[in-house]
Every structure is written in structure tokens, then in C-alpha cells.
Image (cartoon, rainbow, N blue to C red; front, side, top):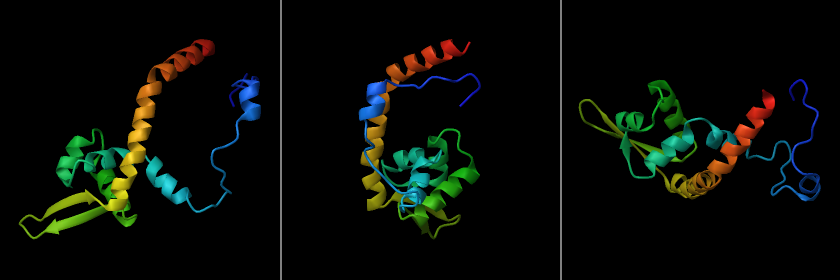
Length: 137
């Protein structure tokens, strides 16, 4: 909370009748997976790989704003989690391609739902932000 914040947000009826969709004890075994999906770059990389195998430099161009180091770390983590495969071709210099595994592809349906939800609610969220910001000044 910030200084001066004294109100409960949301309607009382909503707060009383809304049960959580999912309940999970503090350590239910999914936190590490959620952390991977919730990091800054994973969704962007997965979206680009959903179209097919990509070379490193191609991914770096497509994922706007990602550094070489961050892309390397993200791809390694996705590979470790079994979401991406890395194939090295014996050329000079070596050509490396990254591709989603079946598990990685299954995640794209969830990402599509999140993108659709974001697009559907973008205007409502924008208005809520403007109203909130107006109250803060």
C-alpha cells in the first residue's frame, strides 16, 4: 500500500462471493514453471518459435529489445525445461537452430488465450489506468 491509501478496491459483493479458481499451498510444485512463463522474454521467444525453427540471429531480430545475453539465457532455460530443442549443424561457422518441442507447442494455446484476453480488455484497462492516474494527482 502507499501512503494515504485507505479504501478497499472492488465491490463488496465481488470480494465476498468470488472464490479463487485455483488453490495452491505455498509450495505446490508449480512455482518454478510459473516463474519461467512469467519472465520478461519467454512468451516473446515462444511466440516467434511457434512459426517454426529459427536461427539465433533471426530470433534476436524478431524479439525486439532483447540483448544477446538475455536471449541466450532464455533459450537455455527453455531448452532445460524441455520446451525448446537446439540443433547444431556441422557447418563453418556452426549453424544453430531452435525449435519448440511438443510441450512447447502445447503452451502456445495458452499464450493465444492470454493475447486474445489482452486485446479484448485493452480499452477497459486503459480507461481504468486513466481513472486511477487522475485520482493520484
